[in-house]
Every structure is written in C-alpha cells, then in structure tokens.
Amino acid sequence: MLRVFSFLLTILLSQVSLAANGQYMTTTEFLEKNLAIQKNSPEATPDILWLTKESKKTIEHILGHPFNALRLRYWTSGNKTAWIFNETGKEKPITIGISIEHLPSKQNKITSVDILEFRESRGWEIRHEFFTKQFAGLFLTEENRLNRRIDGITGATLSVNAVKRCSAMALFIASQLNINTEHNEP
Amino acid sequence: MNRKLRLLHRYLGIVSAFFILLLSLSGIMLNHTDDLELDTTYIDNPALLQWYGIQTTPITNFQAEQFWVSFDGNTVYINKEKTGNCKKLTGAHTFDTLLFISCENSLQIYNQHSQLIETIDKNFGLPTPVSGIGVNKKNNKQQIYLLSQGSYYQINSQTLAFNKLNSKSRQISLPAKAPTNVIKAIKIQSQNNGLNLERILLDIHSGRILGIFGVLLIDFAALLLIFMALSGLWVWLIRIR
Image (cartoon, rainbow over all chains, first blue to last red; front, side, top):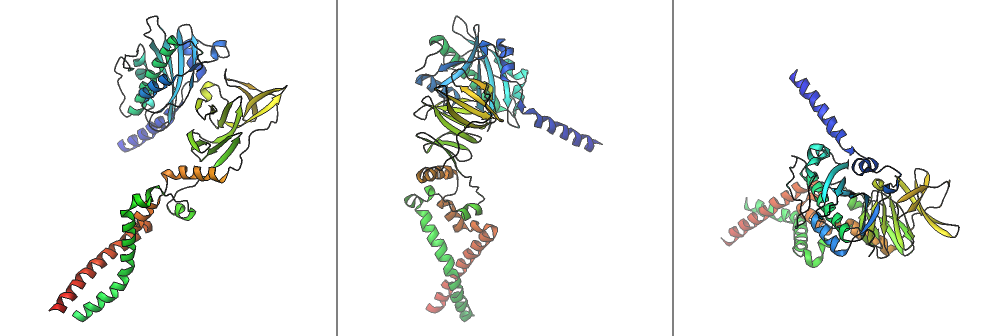
C-alpha cells in the first residue's frame, strides 16, 4: 500500500514539475497589473532608452556578462516605469518583468517583480509571491547592489540570481532616466 | 627453452613493430601539440565526424545588401562574425540604414557596424512564429514587413507597431548561396566546439578511437612491449654468459 502511495505521489509531483515551466503572465497582464496600462492605449507603446558606453559597462558589471544591445524599451505611467528582460538562469532565458517607482530623492525603488515566463525544468519556484514579494521596496546602493539580502530557494540558486541581477539592472537603468531625457539617441 | 624464447622474441618483435611505430609517432606528435597546432586544427571529414557522433548542420545564408547573414543551427553570423543566438533564422533585410534579422521567435535589429541595437520578441508584441521578412515600395515609400502564420505585418521599429496588412502574397527574403570564404569561416567557428586533430591523436594513442576493443588492443600492445623488453634482456644475459 505504501509502495502504491509513493508511486502515485511521485507521478503526481513529476507532473507538477513538468507543468511548472511555461508562460505565467503576458506583457499586457504585467502592464495592467503594475502600471494600470490597458492594451492598445497610447501608454502601451513602449519608449526607448539609448544606452551610453558607460551605462553599458555598468550593466555588464551588474550582470557579470556581456550585454549586447544599444537601446532598451520601457513603459511609463505616472512616476512608474516597467521593464521586461530575458536573463539566463541555468541554460534558458527567464522573462522577468520589473516595475519601478521613481522618487524625487532619486532613490527609485522596485514596486514589483513578476516572472512572465520560465523555460527550464527546475527553479520555477521563483514565480511565486513568497519569493518575488521580497523585491518590493528594494533600491540600489552606491555599489550598484540591492540594498537588502534576498532569501534564496533551495535548488533554484541560478534562477534566483538571475532575478536579482535583473532587479539591480532595472534600478540602475531607471536611474538613467532621471539624469537623461527620455529619448537620448547617441 | 632459451631457443624457444629467442624465437618468440623474434616473431613477437615483428608483431610489436606496428604498435611501436603507432605509439611512437602519435606520441611524438602529441608532445608537440602547440608547434603542430593540433588543438586548433579542426576536422570536417564527414566520416570522422559521424564516427564521433557529431552532427553537422547545413549553414543557412541570407544576403542583405553588403551583409551576409549566416546561421549554423545555433549562432547567427554577420559577415562571418558571431553576433548572437537564434532558434531558427528565417530572413534578413536592410531597411533605413538598419539590418533586420528575423528568427522564428525574435527580430534582431543591427546598425551598419553590425552592432546589435535591440532584440524584439513576443513580449514586445512581435507576432510569432516569424517565417520571413521582406521590403517593398508602396506610394514611393519603402515599407518593411514580416510574415507570421500566413499573415504579413508592417514593422515600425520605432513604435514597435506590427500592423497586419491585407496582402495575400508578398516577396520575402530567400536563402542565398554564400561565397566559399564565408562558408569556410563559419564552418571553422562552428566546429570550434567540435573535433580537433589533438583529440583524434589522443584517441589513436590510447586506442579509444576503436572503443573498448581499441583500449584492450593497446593494453595488449603494452604487455607485448613489456614482454619484448624482458625477453630481450634475458636473451642478452644468456648470451653474455
């Protein structure tokens, strides 16, 4: 009886882990949730931020690997911006959405982190609120690090680190918007 | 007994000559790997690649004005230089001083210096899967569009608008035959994670090139050479007595 139960439990859990990777949220849902931007509204068209050489260097330092893009897209609503990045966990990219509140003191802070899509078979636990809610309120230190430690998840270290890197990067890039005008083509 | 040993030494010596030559020559070459550039000489012989279970993917090429955009099954190359990854290259076209490269799941935009400007995927509204890209002139104005699931979408790379067009049939860029030097350069880079001469020589030297049978054969050769050394010493000792 115990063997049958163990077998059924294994099957059930394996199905759960197989079903766990996939798309959890579309861009439209992410923008609606965090910036109250409706589909097909004017705010739904993203703005462009051109990156300077110095910005790219800092981004590469934060990410720990080359960053091959000259511009990024972001959405704005009021004093909030939203960003979507693809960052590799172990082998495949994780699509991460980050919304940031811009404050007059320039200490911009994260309001929300959402996992839009997860493509690997392990580490998908990062999509749950118990993990992502840790990022709310975080800001960037002078060393371009998150100001607070994030509790990891056993077996999802690489995925956790990918989210942390993207969060720090989003805060850094958002700070560039305060300094530069919004359409600053080099 | 001594006579039998001398005869055995003589005949096994003939057999061991082959192994001595094989191990000595491969050993000398391996000792000079750097000078002979064995580790940077890559093999493109189909039979050998097949023996090692290495799949060779045909290289797809698109020409977009001065750009040759190539794809080896994993990596995109622009004018022989590695640029980025792609699931499947479906087209390339220049438009308004930019180079647009369409992959099945993304649209990559490059400037005239082959620097990536940005990659657009479905998160930014790209209709997927993308099966082609094309440019045409309408009302004296050029427009760039992509093909996805039988429908054409005009691309506005500034606003990221993908407006569905009413056309039923439009021209899209097609694969082209790249010059030999482009193909060769791609193949070399593509095989950089593949099979080199050093690997083959190491496997010949150890016998692994023939699997477990080869390994046992070289073990036998080693025992044979040990026997040759000992029997030779014995025969010499008997003689000087």
